[in-house]
Image (cartoon, rainbow over all chains, first blue to last red; front, side):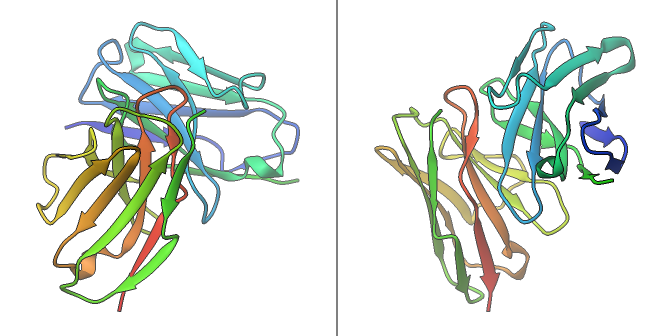
Length: 117
Length: 107
């Protein structure tokens, strides 16, 4: 069955870099896109970026200067790196599988990240 | 970016009732609208895509419709497990954008 699971540190120091991993199973990264979406506590959803099945990426313009998404297809993993973290980056980060028409049909459980010293 | 204005922000309804949640797109999104359900502490789950197509496994009491740039999610015969926050998302153009959410409470 399709599964996605995020992993990473729960606490990051201000101005440091966040590194998250999305490990997928039940589908191939070369056949499906994987997106990153985040959600501040009690708030709405913000799309961050996508690793396309072909290996290219697109980013939310508001985050583009700080964000990098990569993958390792041999390990079925997609990586997110975001630098210069601030308190407003305290949120739950999700990876999600993108459908053929760019809605999100499967989501990971999410990982809560707190930016604090 | 396409703006999605979702209403109401919250609503309270009784078991067995029917409720409607709406999303207004800032421009034509050509039926490329998805609805998600999110329960506390859980990730969003896809309910409907392409405005009215029901995701596999989703009960038929959930339905989606559209009128111009206005999209609606209707939940019939409310059950206790329907208490959640619902989000719309346009999947017509990049970046994908979401409505602000509707918190549904069961009386």
